[in-house]
Length: 142
Image (cartoon, rainbow, N blue to C red):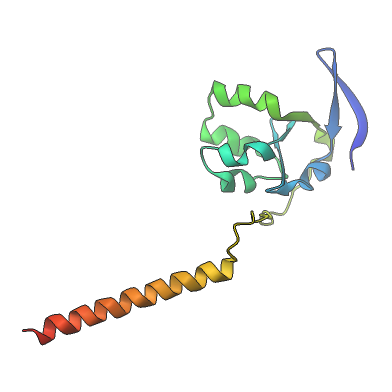
C-alpha cells in the first residue's frame, strides 16, 4: 500500500514508501531495494548486474544500504541508481525485517528443474561407470 505522502525534493514531488511497501517487491519480476533512504526499482537491471542477479535478489524488498556501501560501489554505480529511482523511504516505518529467501520466478527455459537434476545424476553415474570400467581394464591388462 503506497502512502499518499508527498515530499518536496529540489522542486520535484517524490513518492514516499513505507518499508512494508518496499518489502512486497522481492521477486525476480518485481525487485525493489532501499539504498541510503531512497527506493529503487532494479528489476530491469537484475540480468545486467555484474555480481549476478542473486546478489540483488538477496537484498530485494529491504534496506541494502550497508551492503551497497560494503561492496564499495563507485561513482558510476551511484549515478546509475538515478534511472531506477521511484521514491523516498519513510524512515519512521523502518522495522527489523526477518530475512526470508527471495522468490525467484523461473524464466521458462522448457526444462524443469527436476529434469536437469536427473540429467546431471545420469551423467555423473555414467562417468563413475566409465571410470570403474577403465580401472578394471587397466588392472586386467597387466
